[in-house]
Image 1 (cartoon, rainbow, N blue to C red):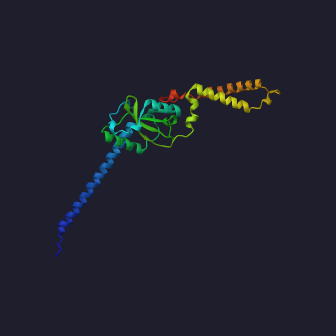
Image 2: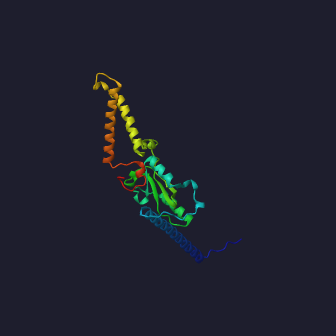
Image 3: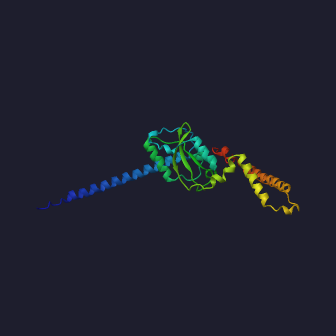
Length: 239
């Protein structure tokens, strides 16, 4: 069987067409990357822009039910752990690329642009960078929110316990009362009196209670601190 002779002109044409195809593919890929970057930038602008949107038109059949939360659930977790639930434009940390990708995926699936982003995070994350774990939500309407992404490190396991005194004035008073009692127990009464009885102990306890209460009140006023239920959705630093 004789091999067909090579037509040099045809071979040259095939090389040229191959080069054109490569260029077209390269341009197409570059166009995709440019479009993705532009979409990322637009989402970033929406995350940082002030937006009063309270409803996003999402298909509930496509949402994960475990990621849908009512405002009362978010409020409870914010009060327990002393967190804030604020618009994303108040957030001063970096929004990770993974969160941007999830937003794009959600927008593509539902054929809409998401707005009105909210973030749950410690107060300090709304004024400087840190490594605690924020939660990114988008409103669904009727006080329901959809969790898009969580990033960063988990909260300290003792944070809920440590923030318990700040849930109410009753909790804080009880902490001061208990602390005063144990401090009075550890204090050597012999420094003040030669006769030790229950009467002297309760005088010392009352003195310790007043001293610790005064320190707590002074610190709270000086630092502009407030209790968890009053700050969980406040945008003011000294709320």
